[in-house]
Length: 188
Image (cartoon, rainbow, N blue to C red; front, side):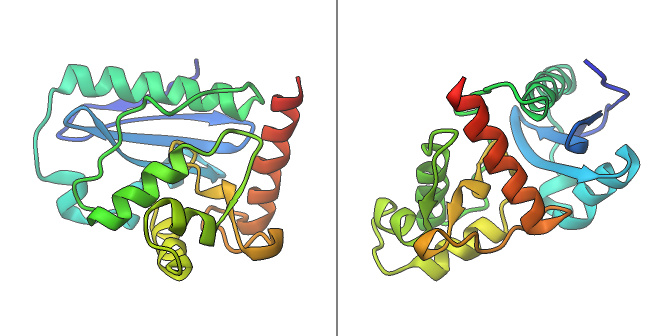
């Protein structure tokens, strides 16, 4: 494992370089509250955690520093394995959903159930979340996903298999890369 930084503060942050670029994980209160990846440096990746998260969600509550640091390190190690092309299951990783509405939580749950190597449309996720016709709202939830890869928003595509959008660095090129990588791992 290539952990080069674990910051002890109300939010534990672990980062490493990987084949997908830098990866950073933020944990507070026993839940992953942020993941960023694809940046050229760990510093930029860590900074993007604070820029994209609200100050309330990233800094307010103190948690169990030792437990949070351990969880951040564990999740980071699994993310690096994933980036190296290994099939990795993130469904049991605890993620913060307290800031989400009931609909958004259902969308996250449906997204997390998509197996690696498979895709679902925004409309399919809306139906699974109990709100057929809410494909645009699903797109908004995916676009504001604070924990990509663990909540695999890259597996959600537009109607007809079009990729839709992706907010990670390198955008749709990264989304294509993740999907191809997962399909190759699933075929093994």
